Image (cartoon, rainbow, N blue to C red; front, side, top):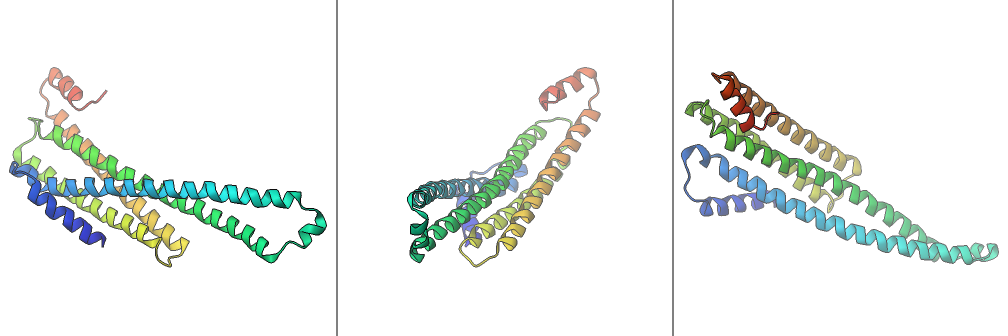
Length: 227
């Protein structure tokens, strides 16, 4: 299902995106796919968290009512408490623990997705600057484009992992297995983000090395926002 969603978005984007210069065409469709799907995932997770938080409030109130009843009973009455009431209290407690666990999972998934958003923003910021930097030749810009395309393609794989995690809540997957997928997705996005930052840093340093005057260096540092 997730592959079909990404493919559909890709087709729509390819139809709607106007013709642009050759050095941006390969990157833009992938970028828009990542941005669109990531935004949808974050929105879906926020909705799920909100529903679970509402359910948590309801369960806590129900649990408190049962506890209030217990506190008013005498010792001999407690011993006569029906099994049905005991099971009800136990059910509230177990369901509450389950809901809190789900909220923790969803919040962790959202953290991964937000990191994905930061990656896209950092890419856009750096790519727009490098294309304006006269210290880079056209073939170097084309090389950057290939590297960025590779990083963004890896980002699509990260989104696949996120969908896999979300799908796991409707299947009989163990918490251990689910946690393993979450940690793997987090490690992958961290690696992609670190690779992007390192590549950007290397390009900035190369541009600074090619500066011929102190004034040029100062202008470049301001251009790239370097203190």
